[in-house]
Amino acid sequence: MPYRLSALSRRHLVGVHPDLVACVQEAIALTPQDFRVQEGVRTVARQRALVASGASQTLDSRHLTGHAVDLVALVGGVPRWDWPLYYRIVPAMAQAARSLRLPLIWGGTWAYVGNIQTAEEAENAVIVYGDACRVKGRRPFTDGPHFELDRRAYA
Ligand SMILES: [Zn+2]
Image 1 (spheres, rainbow, N blue to C red):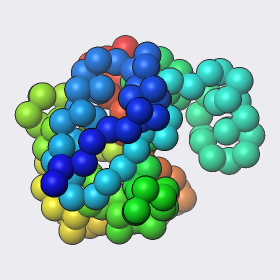
Image 2: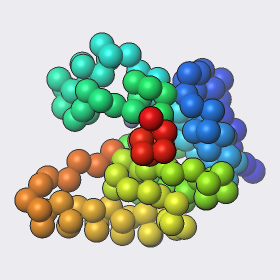
Image 3: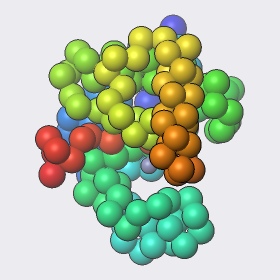
Image 4: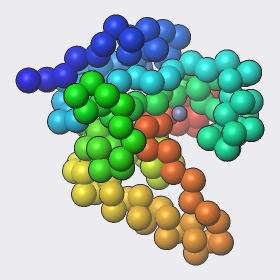
């Protein structure tokens, strides 16, 4: 049985770009892992607080402009943060992005997700991203719940 967006998720999509809303709506019907929209549009004040706490690294967040969503995995209706759950959401968002032809970026790798078809591929992509960061002497910053429309196509 496909999952459906809750009233809370739909409220959190208010103000989000319609293309990204369409992607989330298509993904919830495809995903084997239930999720909810935890956050869509964010205020500057909240973004400042998140950066101060280390939860975000930029004041130029795509959430400020309605080009990003955070999808939180639900197990029995309860939010969970374990990575394997997120690897199962990614292929659904990727499939939706492919069908809608959206340049969708995932916070697990900060790259296009459109090519990811399985949970294993999502997990491997995070490993490859982490290795690439370390080669450059940078610490990887991964954000499994986060998806955004590429700013090169959506300013
Ligand atoms: Zn986010």
